[in-house]
Image (cartoon, rainbow, N blue to C red; front, side, top):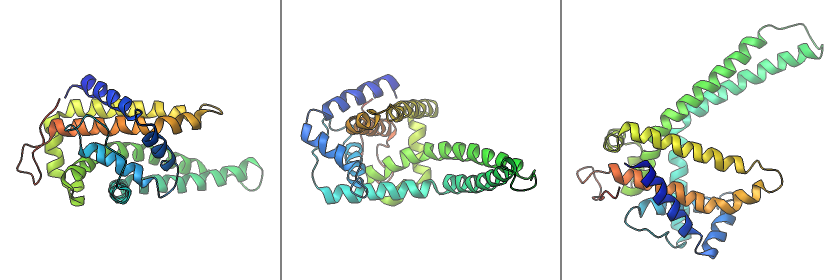
Length: 240
């Protein structure tokens, strides 16, 4: 897999997304409406399913199908992230207990409780472990969800032996570098929302092409490691 080729192709693809103003506006609006935003996830699924065979963003149609496709992606992500969420929750509870003790100490509402410090330390460790777990799980989740989409079978999101073979064909080093690159780009996109006054509007406007960029990139990575047959789905021809 050529990372620069992947990102360059995905960027050009995202520019074609904005050629249809109506589709662009519809996706932007749907993206901020709870429940209806599943349609946007479903549209991302459709991009992945048509990559690399098509170089044009698909039409925004079949809203019910898109909604259910988005729901499947959300369900798969939730299952993948059960462990990190549990770790984060444990850390949050420890942190709340520690902060309560410190608050009582600072405002003179009780005796010093030195148990607060270990609890806050435990919260920090839990946060770090949770982040590491989330990243490690994301390594499988990204290709697992793409595998689910391309095969049309929800269970394939968790066919770990097949997913690991796909990543192996991509190359573990190339794949990890790609994940880090996408993570860094996503952080930049998220940071835009923090710009005072106009950040939310910039995020709203840029969300559809950014979603198209990431979805296309995932689809290309999957295609570069997809089997030529024998793993329960159609042959997918390598494009990069």
